[in-house]
Image (cartoon, rainbow, N blue to C red; front, top):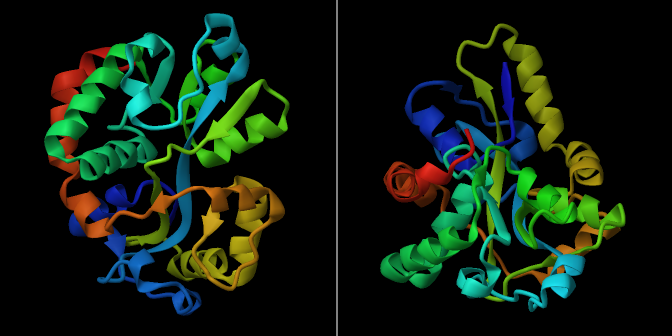
Length: 259
């Protein structure tokens, strides 16, 4: 009845195709307009930041430098040491591709993606797989939805979190009502609670995603995000460009996607 979390581009597509119910929750009032659908189809619940999870033991063993930028990931010294998930499945990793194209420009952005492709053994199905593979020492670097990597660091794996110096995408993760929900009132109550101050604080305590309400208190362990330069893309543009970008990605790089 309710759709909780995921890439905003998917919500935009679902709204346009008639799968979502228009609902403007009263709890959404304090949330900035840039985190909400102008048509009322969805409301941003949290921001999923992206970082790199880097295994320091692997770097030491293979005499590799700590990557500091997105451009570093295209260097030949990281051959077979970079892991990324399939952006046609992972909204977070689609936001990375969109970010790199917007950051460096169309030509240079795709050129960097080609260089990164040469360093990636294969593209995983799940967004959580790259940081976990880095933590286990299967690769040196995993492109990470921050909420996964911060837990791996806390669990004592030999990994560090790196925010590329050019900036990282902050992907909006929304909540929405499904069109024709069987129990619409219960679904609305769920959405209201998720967007409430209490709901966002509970989410931040357990998922390592920063809430969109300015009045929700951010827990101590998430304050490391303050070191990152987070760039929140225009939701309309990221949705509009999705098909063209992913079609091109599939054509150029899809042969390495995990089956």
